[in-house]
Length: 291
Image 1: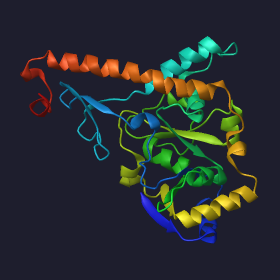
Image 2: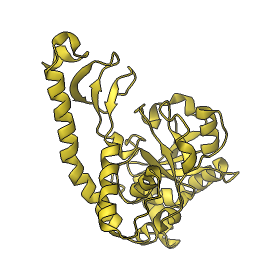
Image 3: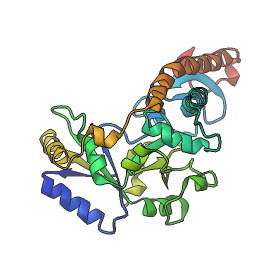
């Protein structure tokens, strides 16, 4: 991924105009440029089988470890989503049973749920708000620009942005796929929310060198971030305008994070018991290190 340092507001505006001249780009902001570009559900992953499909003691992946050997990785996204849906059904008289799991994941993502999704916005000011909202002194923020149509062409062969209903027909395991978010909540609409969905390949976007021409990373100094904050406030863009309103779904998402800890621990414990019950010859590649 190409990384470009931005030196001024004028420089930033020029870059956005240059890359978004056809008004078809998506944007994303992160308050720390060192953070990997990956979904929340991928930030704590465990290897449970090696590339020979042999069980291993559940081993947490470190920041520099990626699924390049064909290992089976436990991604807890479905645990989070199952709990989110369960609690929504219990507490909302207006819960719509016709909504797909992916649509519910999109809603959950915007309320703080850990999912397989990475959110993007077609509004650059939204991304800049998230890039600078929690900026820390002596650190840099990151601002990303993605051409979703060209990106999808590289991944799927089709130069289009998919809809929610299209995703179930696609193979998203090789690389993420970009799709338009459902505009069914005020928050998603206000943030012009769109998504990339990530599959079994747990590489962050940062490690895909083949996408250099369709995704760009811009770094923003602390001082420049403060200038951007001031500019956004002058335009009426602040936390209240971005988040629109808080509702029970935000509380549900927070509750899910706490409740899921027990379920994830139980799952990993079961896998460890399974691994320990096997003879050495049926254990995976890390058996010599983990006994």
